[in-house]
Length: 271
Image (tube, rainbow, N blue to C red; front, side, top):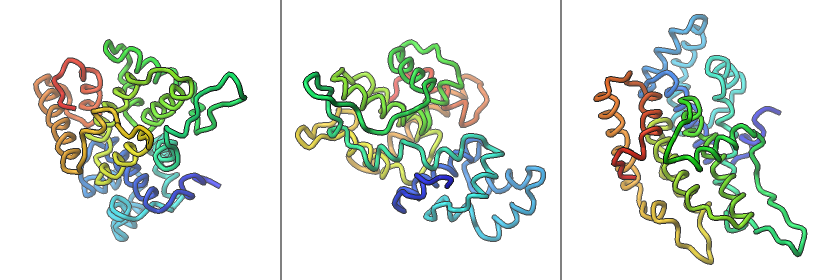
């Protein structure tokens, strides 16, 4: 069965994942409103009938707001137009937030047989990219495509997986956590401009928290309200708008994302 993982998520998480799915399509089309999304989808040759049906049912408005997407044919059709959007719905990022607490990852023991049993990313290229990104974050030589991959639910899932692996191996994860925080902020400021961002951030805090040592890293703990998170994300968007305009670069969501990802260390970003 397709999207079995997604279909087994509780409804609130399916709502969040569906919202991110729509936001990704909007990101690809460089639009910020549903009306513009509908207009550009309608302009695609051969989509007139589908677009008319979507307008009549308010499909995109419903999915963007509160209704999980359940139409497999629709998901597959959009996947044909915008490859690698379907995988957002059942991404391991949501699974980590829902079911995995870092404190429950047991460190490797030399005395008894033990191994990390949590979710794993089976994409070796993605995990190698994640390692390179974390290790060389201060001197990025990654391509635009690689930076775009990192700043997505795929990259965030890989960072969470890498964090669990470091925990299991009893290695220092401070640099990875900083990369995770910055990647989350840029991703949700510029790629998934979702109304659910506070819910997602709280789940991320819970994922990283430890009941025996509840102190989160400062950059995660400092954000203690939705208003504060929205303010920081708005600041990041404004910086991106200003920098891209001053650099006379094409002002698209992708360009802004790549610009901030590449220059985050030289810009005075108030993360």
